[in-house]
Length: 75
Image (cartoon, rainbow, N blue to C red; front, side):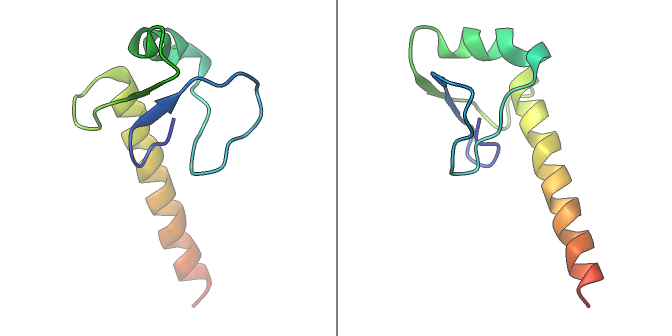
């Protein structure tokens, strides 16, 4: 799932994908499968408050914090 855009894709293999996609944790796989259904891609609302959107928000927050700390270290 791309945590910045909410794009969710089904991977055929467990290989990393470029473009900001992160693997879904095991405990959220059922929610991702339900959202995808029989399709290979879907869009998750980033403001819905569901399991996947909360996880994406947490990941965005972690990335923002890491960037802030990196800027502080590089001063």
